[in-house]
Structures are given as C-alpha cells and as structure tokens.
Amino acid sequence: MNKKTILSLVFLLAVSINFFINQPSNTPNQIQQTQTNIDKNGVYTSKKEVASYVFYYKHLPNNYITKKEALKLGWQANKGNLWEVAKGKSIGGDIFRNFERKLPEAKGRIWREADIDYKGGKRGAKRIVFSNDGLIFYTADHYESFEQVKNEK
Image 1 (cartoon, helix red, strand yellow):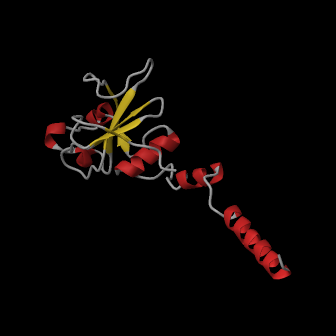
Image 2 (cartoon, one colour; image 1 turned 180 degrees about the vertical axis):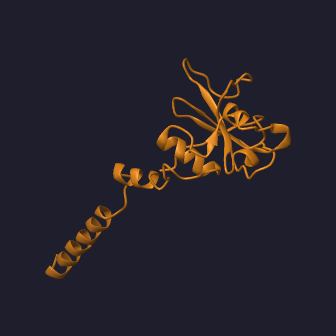
Image 3 (tube, helix red, strand yellow; image 1 turned 90 degrees about the vertical axis):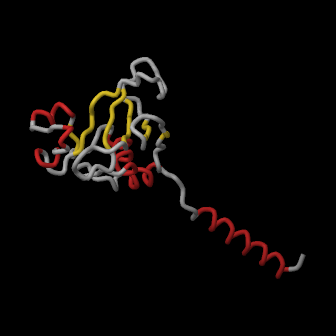
C-alpha cells in the first residue's frame, strides 16, 4: 500500500470512531432530564402527561382529587358540577378493584384510577389505571379494554 492509501484509511477510521463516540445514548442523566420536563407542580390531564408524571413521581399531579374529596366539596357526579365546586380539578386516586381481572394481578398490587382529558362537565370514559409497583394501563372505553402504557424515555 502506498502512503496515500494508508492516510486515507487512517482518516476514514478516525471519522468513523468520532461518529460513533458522538452518537446520543440513553444515559441516566438524559433520561432524568427528559422525565423532569414534567413539573412536579404542573397541571396535567392527557394520557401521555399523566402517565409520565406517575412514572416519575409515583403519584398523581396536584390537579387530581379523589371522589371522597370532591363529594366533601359538593360534587354531584350526575350533575357534572366538579369544576363548579373544584375549578380545574379532575377525579383520580381512588382504588380500582379489578373485579373483571382484565389487569395483571400480583400479591400486594394495588390499582388506582384517574380521569384522562377531563375538561369539565360530566366525566368521560377515558382513564389511566396505575399500580403501586409501577404498571400503568389506559382505557378509552371505561374499563372494557386496556392498553399498557410504557415509560417513554
């Protein structure tokens, strides 16, 4: 091989190594930075946002109140008056019993539910159901079917 060929190969090797070294990776710092885009004091109602919040903080955002808390404030589900008694709040945090066994079971697992995309008035059919051991499922048809929500890193 002549010097020109050797220099060309060395150059290509250096460029290739540089390319692979500078590729983005899923390091813990990058994952944490992505997850912390969900503000602990933020107001979230969408499937993606609420699921991300629960994955990161292990509880619902502050704009959620339980049915019991809402009832104490004067909420009447049949009237759809939640925002009249608790402006901007959504129902969530109550235990979901999984009677139909559509969700995976494990000893000690506790499921909780939360309304999704609530915009006032009567509650819709969309919910997330999340467990104390990190599972989250979404239902758009009021518990008839579920899809698992994965943590997007």
